[in-house]
Amino acid sequence: MSIKPQNQYKFIFKFILIGIINTIIGYTILSIFLYFNFFYDIVNLLIANILIITINFFNYKKNLFKINGNIKKYIYKFIYLSIFIYIIQSIILTNIENIEFYIQSLILSIISSIISYIGQTKYVFKTE
Image 1 (cartoon, rainbow, N blue to C red):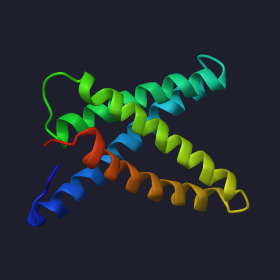
Image 2: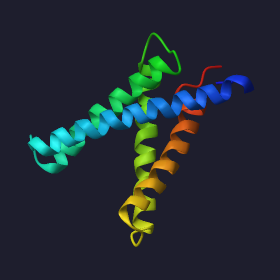
Image 3: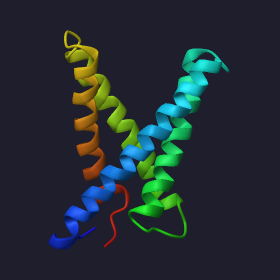
Image 4: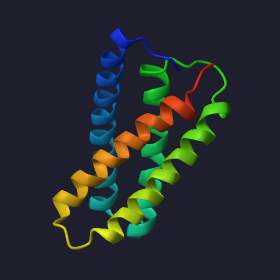
C-alpha cells in the first residue's frame, strides 16, 4: 500500500485511533468474560482473544483500508500477523520480567503497535 506523504500522518492517526478503540473494546470483552467467569480462565482468554482479533480485523478492514469483497485473502494473513505479534510479545515478556508490570505493558504496546502497523500495511492489506 502506497500512501502519499500528505496523507501519511492522517493514515497513521486513524490507525492509532482505531487501535485505541479496538483496545477499549478488547479490554471490555476480556473483563466481562473474566468477571462473569463463563469458563475457565484460559478458555475465557481464548474466546475473548478470538472475538477481539475478529473485531480488530473488521475495524481495520472497513474503516482504514477500505477493503470490500472476499475476506479470505486478508483474514488468514491478519490471524498470522496476530499470532506473530503474540509470539514476539511472549519472547519480550520473558526477557523483561524484572520490570514493573505497567512499564512492561507500555513497552509491549509500543512494539506491538509498530509491528501491527508494518504488518498490516506491508503484508495483510497490501494492495498492488
